[in-house]
View (cartoon, one colour):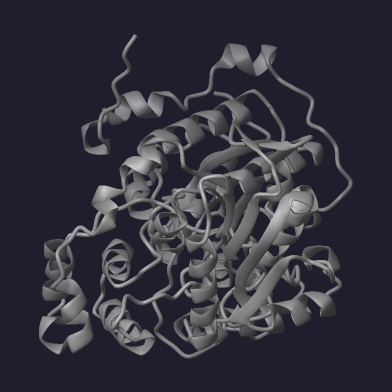
Length: 536
């Protein structure tokens, strides 16, 4: 049977909205008794967020992805023999904890390893009591710190050279375990000679400043790099390469995470030059960059691409926003909520995203059949914020059924990485600004526990240059701020959401989980209480 789904502009609004009308028979027959929970909605929201972060801890995701069976391991459904032939490399902000767990599992067959991690990470983990994410004293893995302020530097380049040398010395009997997480691109800088690191950075910085997309930036990065775009996998031939990836990118595209060092990709000079010409950078390129781009391409990426199909390179995403949302949903159910995932790739401007959540809250909390204008606006807004019309229709249908059938409380979950337009110089981040904007959207709605609660938090524990991961809000935010002499709109204009939440009620609405040691973007949560319904 084939199902057809039309584009939003082709949808018959009457047909779509009919999905959400109450069904009187189900109201009386299917009503469930709501689960009671003495814990406040604020506390439960924090616990659900904590579960999301816990699910994507670097050691946990590695432990769940590697199954050890005597002298072999099973990864992503494939079996690999262990004969003192394991080598390990890694790069990224969460890689230290990933490497520590990998060594616990296959350490008896590990020959050696090198990982490139952020400057100061070992000391930071020790200070926060995260010793389980540190390597043991007699570890065979060498830790190299670099990339201060998340920018490629000479220390990170030395680590990349060490990783390249290790990979280049492997034979067909060896197994190279590659650990990758967010921040990996800055920790693996290996410009193609004679290009210097500074020259490569200048080109990519100018591109970013001119408004190039992430895809365009990666096209140029791969062309100017020895290891990105499958370069590391090429260096490791003929060894077996297995990459375990903790994704911090919407949709988990393997070629974009750390610029895809183990993902084969062709690099054509015409494509690279087209990108540079589009942003008027051709005339200001260094001679070294022109020399590299003038060489015949595609390079080895075309000739060696067959190796990828032979199974000598295995790439598997072991942790992502979807994984975090899955476990958050399980915890929400334990706390008396019916979990419902909207989408893991919410993006776009925070003002549009806040409008989305405000509309969903009003749709779900309506005591009668919601006005059709709400569903219509949601469907128009979806493409702006990375949410498919199908996902919105499904979500509205479930919320409608939950309301009419008396399912009790609902926990609507989503993830992604919205953006903020900078208009001021205050302190804050996208999660705190989103929470502040949603608070305005919820104005005049009932207060918890009879009204909705919204949480937005970054899984890395740091929202912008602040110590908070995000914030929690509800329909009482505006009046609470007014009573304390805080003008929400002034704080928003100055992008000063952290200062706002710090001053509001002594910071009680801030979400401050501390060092999380991971990053799979953001978690958004809308808690919806049981709604007494009025049937016509």
